Image (cartoon, rainbow, N blue to C red; front, top):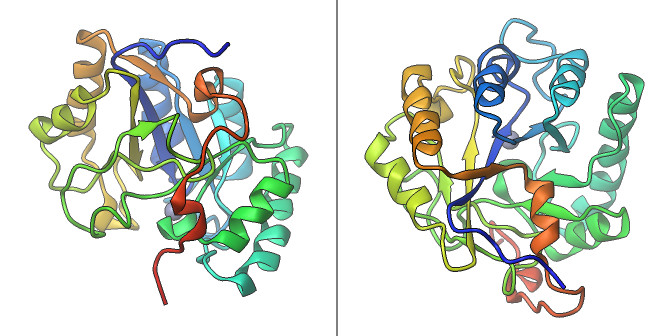
Length: 252
Ligand SMILES: [Zn+2]
């Protein structure tokens, strides 16, 4: 029997192995006892000023945070042709993490928020249990919108939607709208990049804003967890038929 989902359950995710994750985000979350998932990829690690190293990922793991696989190159994994490439890149990240003592991830962050049935089959075959997509196709990319909440009875756990995708123009009011909907068995999944994100300014979150978001979660008694922790709420395998598993985004 799966556990009931507390109201105010929020999953925090941080993509692309940005240096500010280890320098600023993780210590702040730790102070509040919050969980989070950091989706790491190698794509930008040569830029050591702005991006984490594998050792940084190990430090986040040691702090108790979840390290998720975000592929090696951060290419799109959308088509049948992309599926074999994904298989190789999952292994590359797993090996790099193993070399610094981080266990094999159980979560995957779809790079660029793209997805498709054949890459999905690879994730399933490789034993991944959870994967986060974007707000697409329900909402257009790059706009301040409210994405779908995660409904464990309806969404494939390898196609968990983003409920709020943080952009630089986000306000505390918008953040509240994203997370206040987390009730009645639905979970708010929030997607962040760097805090700050100097290298990718279109997904930058200002640290002073982020402090407000975290304070709101703390003051409101939110249950803030990593993606892998949703496992305890899932129905038995085979009970979910998500039509999204037969779609791809972006569509050709
Ligand atoms: Zn990414």
